Length: 401
Ligand SMILES: Nc1ncnc2c1ncn2[C@@H]1O[C@H](COP(=O)(O)OP(=O)(O)OP(=O)(O)O)[C@@H](O)[C@H]1O
Ligand SMILES: [Mg+2]
Image (cartoon, rainbow, N blue to C red; front, side):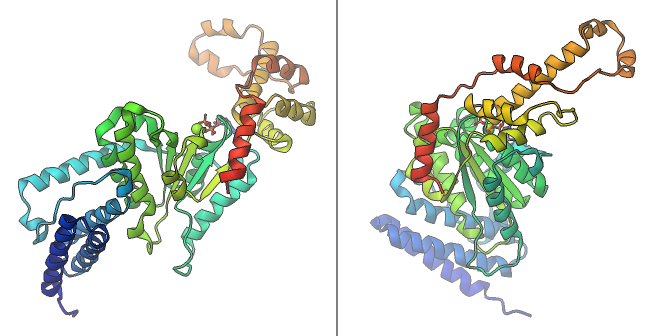
């Protein structure tokens, strides 16, 4: 039977908390931060002795850890109001605290909306083999038994032009692992939940940990930079601060659970140092080269006969036209439609048939031909210019890695 140390621990906690408050009054940030961490540590120990209040202690410990982090990143001008712990745990709770819990539950329920099921597989992605490899390695490392000093990446930043497969990569990471996939459009959270975006981010990571393995996909992460979105800048700053705290995730360092954040942006040059420093791995997701373009064409013409196509010539044309993966997919769709319309000239007339009869008919197809693509090329225009691509390349050279 382990010795119950909760009495002395509670005294130690009270002492540390008092010292924390004094340091705050004096404006001594470093001591305040250390004391906040001490409070958190003691609460975690306390949680081991009091089964009944375990959750409550852990929650409070997390609050103290956040406070410590807030003090550390105070340079961003953010100080979260810390609710001091009521000694005695949840049993001694007042109505006020309960409504706090209810609110937290509300946010947790809300972030469930971000969860989507991903069926995307690695083989659905053409090219990008280096990026795929890095993400796969990160996932594998977090699952393997390993020495404590080896930590997998907690966050990877994917940057590159629109339509190059950033969302697809995140979906494949989740799909291959059968992980809980949280797909979050940063700008949506900011515009819809303005003042409450921090609570959403905290709830998001809490649910992600509960449901691990999880992939958190933060799309348009550039929306968090204060350079843009002037009127949202306060909300962005708060959301950013919370996100950074979660990414640092020091409370989970020893834990084996996988919560991988993949952030994506089309405008990496907008990101500020605070975000960049949390994403030491920044991966350029470029336009497809010739080999990648061939692979992508094969993926998006799957099930059809492409033996008559000169894939090399097609791929070269796509590279010349600065096509992204999305453009390639649209090109294939167009070409396929050209073939289908030719083979089934009266297709639209069949719309008059009852659905049951339609179900019994099948579509006529033939092998795809170059002329199907020649027509399609006229319709698909890349929105990108050579100059814009160069800007990505320069950024990748300077900051990527
Ligand atoms: N490498 C690829 N292999 C196969 N398909 C691709 C590839 N890249 C893009 N696509 C196709 O294009 C679609 C759009 O790609 P995706 O949404 O991943 O781009 P993105 O980089 O997230 O773009 P954005 O920056 O606009 O969000 C995908 O759903 C897929 O059909
Ligand atoms: Mg995307």
